[in-house]
Length: 356
Image 1: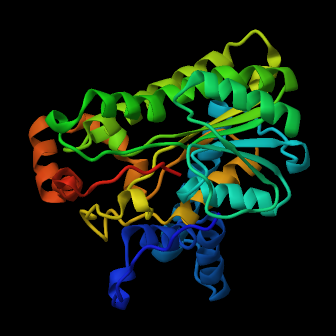
Image 2: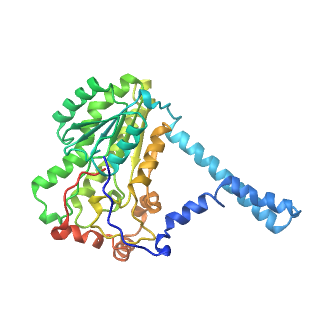
Image 3: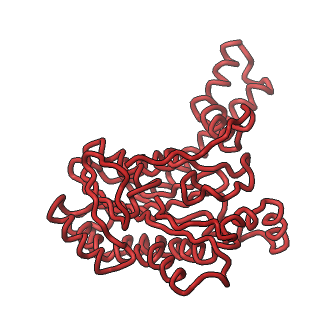
């Protein structure tokens, strides 16, 4: 299951500089509690008086960063509870749309680590990986999902990790979409989640543990020209994820508390699905490479935690979009090139592709 390499051009060193890289460096330096406390300790080693302005500022900064870190930890625990124990030898992982892209990468990683992995896709994988079993299945068809689930149960056991990753994008203006294309988008991007949840969630409840990953998109918050069907389906997943988490929280079976939910809202991914899309800003909205996103998803799954994975940096704050005045939104869309970025797909150059 190899991932096709994207065609890249030679870039200058400064073109690799992004706001995400700057945030990464800051979060592991002055915004990290350990480093923040090193500053007053270093000043004290130079016999700086405690009442010196530099010492007061350094201690105040370290205290603020420490308090923020503690409150952030408490917030996560209140929101998501304690993590569950994950033992890959006892887990069965189902990945929809796992024949290529992000889904294939996650399947390959878990397969190489010795986990039992079942990939559901309509197209054959490009290679074989030990520990990964392929089941040809259109996840937009409830009957096919149920039949595949029975076979997985016989072959591997009861699935306890579900990664709903399958997706499709036509990249056409609204008036050029056919009814069949609209139906296909909603079936694959949205209804497939209902099919897989209704099929695999009962098994997780019976096992008393589980993890469900819902892969949406940052475009679910803002929409985009030439992607009405895609963005509508991804926006619906935000509500589905919230409702699922709420139902599990109040489920009468205590085992539901050990079923974790993860929402993934990435920006533009470096996969074939988006290869013809122009990046509005390489600095503020860099293309997310599949291995970066896969690392974040796998890390959260392995830790047995619920949570949100949002890359690049702006995706973590995109919820603020709804708070902006309408006029400001229009200016941001125009300056940021949100709608013109999808123009190549709207000119008949787009192609269907299962999403990772």
